Image (tube, rainbow, N blue to C red; front, side, top):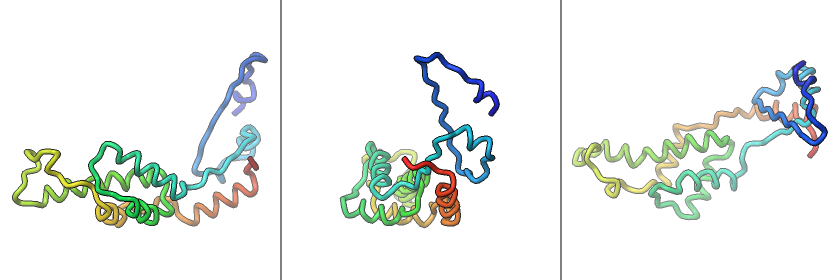
Length: 153
């Protein structure tokens, strides 16, 4: 931290130091003093979670329709971006598992066009396995810390 105090630039240059933590309450006063702007970034809202899902499914075969996306938004309430990514990976395995469980199909020789599209059912099943990793107690602690030390933007 002392080295941060000694960082100097020319008058026409700028230096930006960006840091992130999921344990802001463990920052000591010296660190807080050196990082003047402290912003709380909340979990993604429904629209952001759906954008993540749609981006991850761009190159995948799926049968999702608009009402399915609305259901996925409900399923992912309280999920972080990483949680949503893991959920999509798990849902994408649903069609593969079906092939693996079917005795008439061989996973090693089946063509990509023979695998069914990812469906809402895959997301519902995945949500039973992939749970939110951020606990509500943590969210409360983050909001409390933000009210004490955060910056109004």
